[in-house]
Length: 392
Ligand SMILES: Cc1cc2nc3c(=O)[nH]c(=O)nc-3n(C[C@H](O)[C@H](O)[C@H](O)COP(=O)(O)OP(=O)(O)OC[C@H]3O[C@@H](n4cnc5c(N)ncnc54)[C@H](O)[C@@H]3O)c2cc1C
Image (cartoon, rainbow, N blue to C red; front, side, top):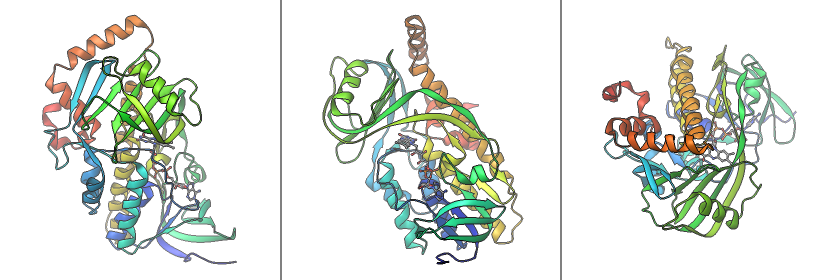
């Protein structure tokens, strides 16, 4: 057998997506021995999640990562819900009680690259081509680059291995929920666009929603629901979506496409976040609609919370390991519920229901309290009760 891994470590992390990378960065910063394993050849280089919210920037600031993210991203200070040209509801991020009163627009591959650079700077590394295939309490079975199998004994195991988590499955933890009927179109495009660069738009339309959000380097992220999306949406597909659902008076024109994808979305929550020495975080623990851009953010925040507890436990402190689930599972349940409501509201087809929805949103949009509440929810600052007394 060709052994490429040590026989023991304090923490095995399965999966080097944004959740696993953040956990590794946080453990490395505290000097905790760990192994970060990923079955892939190397990191994914696609755009995917493009939004980094204020609360995520706050927790990554503790790791010294946020300045680099902010240098690369675009600050969006408002999120506007529209029906065609008419603004129904605006969520202002400016004025939020945070160092980061905006939502940062940055493609996921760039976020992952910056996390990897920080991990390497603190002496950590990703072990690519090391796939977790089995788990028995703290003993992890790993298939290495040449296919040979090795075992690593860890005090704790973190399943950050995404929606189809092997760790979750091996630990016998259910993943309760279902799949949305529609698929999502994602595309990064160049665009002639009538609105300012600091605004994210969500357009409601009878045939589904479309989101238009600014990205660095003059690109825009388009997200849309479609009953049966093409596998690789083209410029024409995206243009058609904007024509059918976006602004009419000053329409957008797609001039090029740098990346596109179709994906099907589930809303699911792990039945528990911990079984003995095994913990779940990120998409392994929760998946939901991308409306609101919460997926990657919730995972990164899980990772920081888990790192704090595991570091305490490894360091011999009296860590209350069950507090991880108590703290983080309700947050994910809230995100699943909120994004589900947003997705269903955006895709109402009945014309009468649409008129009622638009009227209700327009009235709600005149309430600064409701606008602020939504800003707290989307930025995930509502997690921190101390900062949102006016919302209770
Ligand atoms: C096409 C696409 C578009 C998306 N768009 C958005 C968006 O617009 N907004 C949003 O909020 N979210 C979006 N998401 C979701 C977002 O990308 C995820 O929420 C985020 O990546 C979760 O991070 P994670 O680290 O928990 O899991 P992942 O990013 O899934 O990472 C899991 C890692 O685990 C590795 N792995 C898997 N199995 C094993 C194993 N057995 N052993 C070792 N390693 C393993 C994988 O190789 C991968 O690197 C999108 C996802 C996709 C696929």
